[in-house]
Amino acid sequence: MRHSWILAMLLLVVVWPTSIFAQQAYRGEDTLWQDTVWDGEVLIDGILTVAPGVTLEIRPGTVVRFTPMDSNGDGIGEHEMFIQGRLLALGTQDAPIRFTSTAADPRPGSWGAINMMLAEDEENVLTHCIIEHAYRGFHAHFSRARVSDSYFRRNMRGFQFQESEVVIERCLLEDNLNGLQFRNSQVRLVDSTVKGSYWGVRCVYSELDMQGCRIEGNLINGVNLRDSTLTASGNLIAANRRGLYLQRSRGSVTGNLVRGNSEHGIFLEESEAEISGNRIVDNGRAGVRWLNAQGRVAGNHIEGNGLYAISNEGTTPAPAPGNWWGSADPAVWAVLLRDGRLNPETGLVEAVDPLEQAPGLDLPDF
Amino acid sequence: MRPFFCLLLLALALSFGGCAQPSRTLTDAAPAAADLDSLPRVAGILSADLVLEGALVLADDLLVPAGVTLVLRPGTRVYVVPSESTKIEPEWLSSATELLVRGTLRSEGTAEQPVVFEPLSSSAGTVYAWAGLLLDGATDSLIRHTRIQNAEQGVLCINSSPEIRDSRILSCRYGITAQQQSSPTLVGNLLQGGEAGVFCWNESHPLIQDNHIVGHNEEGLFIDRGSRPRLLGNRITGNGIGLALYDPGLAGAADQVRGNRQDLRLLGLPGGRP
Image (cartoon, rainbow over all chains, first blue to last red; front, side, top):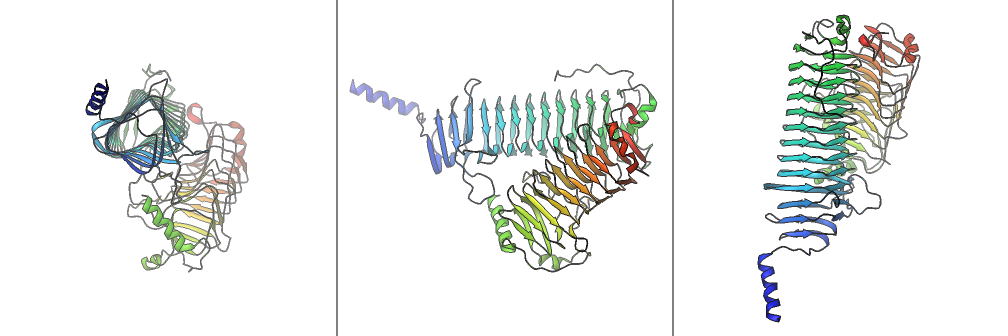
C-alpha cells in the first residue's frame, strides 16, 4: 500500500509539472518558473513575472488583487504582472475572473498592468474577465492575444499595445480615461462597446477592422486613426465630440450609424476613404468634413446635421453621388453643402444623382 | 517611462523648489536659442503647489493634478515647445504639448503685466502648434489678463467652470470650448482669428459677457441643443457664421452679432435659416 502511494505521487510529479496549488500571495519581485494554475484569491504585492515558456492558467471565479505602490508619486501604481510566457485567463459568464486593487478607494492607476511581452508564439487568451482600476488593463508588445466577453472599467487605459495582433470580441470598455490605444498593430474589434472615455479608440500605423461596435460618449474623439487603415461596418458611433476622425489614413466605412456627435460625424483629413451606405445624422457641425481627402461619399443618408451635410475645406473635390440629403429641394442642398461655390479656394462637393428619398440602409438595430 | 517621469520631477524640483524664482524679462521678440537654454523648464506632473514668474519654457506636457495649484504671477511668459512626435504617450488629452489642469490654475496677469503663452516655432510649420490650456475637472481656476496664442484650443473646459477675464485668445483653432457641464465666466475677452470662437456643448451654461469675438473662419459662437449660455453685451463680428444655435429662444442675442458672413444660423432646420 505504501509503495503504491509513493509510486502514484512520483507519477503525478512526472506527468503533471504544473503547480496546481500555487501560492496565493506573491511579494516583491517574483517569477513563475513552471506552469501554474490559480484558483480562488490571489494577492500580488509586488511585480510578478511569468517566465518564457511558462503558462499561467487562471480558473473561473478567481480574484487577483494588486496592492497599491506609487514610489515616485506620478499617480501610477507599480505592482503588476509581466507575462513573458502565456496567459490563459478563462473565466465564465457565471464565474468571471477579476483583476482589481486592494485599495479601499481605488482609482484608475491604482495598480500597473497585465503586461504581455514577446508572446507571439502562442496566443494569450482572456475571456470573461473584469479588469478595473489599472494604469493599463491590457498592455502588450510584440504579442498575440484574444480578449472576449470581458469588462474593462475605470482604468487609465483599457487597452494599450504596440507591434501586436489583438482580437477583441464582445467586450465592454467603460469609463476608462482612454478606451483603446495602439500603434503598429493589427486589431479586430467586434461587437464591443467603448464609452465614457476621453479617447475611445486611438491608433497610429495600424490596421483596424471594426464590426458591430458601439462607440459612444467619448469626450475627445470616438475613433481616431492616424497613418492607419480602417475597415468599419455595422457600428454605432454616437454622442462623442468627434465621431470618426481619419488622419492620413485609408478607410472603408460602410453601413454605420453616425449620430449626434458634437462636432463632425466623420472627419477625413488627408485621407482616402469610401464612405457608403451609412446613416450620418444629427451631428453638431458637419456630417462629413472633407479636408484634402480622396475617395467618395456615396449612397448615404445624411440629414439633420447642424451646419453642413458635407463641408469641403480643402482643395480636392469631394465626389458625393447618390446620397439622400434630407430634402429633395436643391435650394436646401445649396446651404447644406459647403464647398468651392462659397469659397473659391476650396474644392467642390460633387453631389450628383441625389436620392429622392431616404435609402433603405441595412444597418444594425441599435 | 518611469525613470523619465522621475527625471522630469527632479528637474522641476531643482528648477523651482516649489516657490517663485526671480528671472529675466524678455521682450515680445522670439528668444534666441541661448536665451532659451538659460530659462527654467517645466514638464511632468506637479506633486506640490507651484508659483511661477518671469520667463520659462514649457518643455513637454505638464499636469496639475487634483489638489495641486499652479500660480502664474503677473508678467509670466511661457514659451511652449511644440511636440514634434506622433506620440500617443502619455495618455492625456492631446498629442500636442498641453497644460492639463485637474487641480487649480491661477493665471494672474494684469493689464500692465499680462501672462503670455507663446509657442516656439514648429518644424512641422503648423499654425496650431500646441494644445492649449486644458481644464478637466479643474476647480477655483482663474485666467485673467492672459494671452494665449496659436493653440489647438485656447482654453478647453471639461466639467470645469473657471473665470476667464480680460484675456486675449489669438489665432487658436478653437478659442474657448465649454463641454460636459462647464459653466465658465467669460468676461471682457478678445477672441480673434482661427477656426471658431466659442463652443458650448453638452449642457454647458457659461456667462458670456462683453467679449469681442472676431475674425474666425467659421463660427463665432456655437451653442448646442443642451446648452444655455447667458449672452450679454458681446460683439461678434467678422466671422463666417456669427451665431449658430438650435434654440430660437437665444436668438434674442442677435443684436450682439453684426457684420459676419452670416450673422445667425438656426440649426436643425432644413437649410438652417431662421
